[in-house]
Image (tube, rainbow, N blue to C red):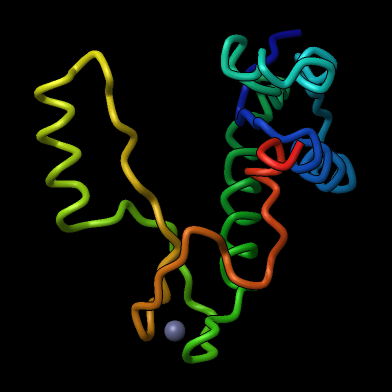
Length: 143
Ligand SMILES: [Zn+2]
C-alpha cells in the first residue's frame, strides 16, 4: 500500500481533529511520527512534524477535503471590526516584506520567514490569529 503525506502539523491537537474528521467521512488515514512529536516537541522541526498520510489513490480527494476544511475554518471567523466572515490568510504586503527581502539578501544564512496574517476581505482588519478561535498552531509556546 502506497502512502502519501498530504499535510503536516506541529500540533498534536489539530492533527487529531483533522484525522477524526477525515475518518468520519470514511477516509482511511493515519498520523505518522505522532508519538515522537508528542513526547519530544523539540524534534518537531527536525523530523518535519506530524504527517497526515493517506493511500495514494485517495490523495487528490483528501487534498480537496482539506481545502474545504480550511475554507470552513476561515469563514467561521467573525471580524471583530465589521462582523464579516471573509477572512483570508495572506502574506503581509508592504514594508515588512521589503525589509525581509533585503535582510534575506544580505544575510542569506539567516533566512527570515515571511509574515502571514489573517485579513478581513471587507474592512481590511488584520490579525496574526484568527479571531474567535483558540490557537492550535502555537500551543507549544505555552508549555
Ligand atoms: Zn472586517
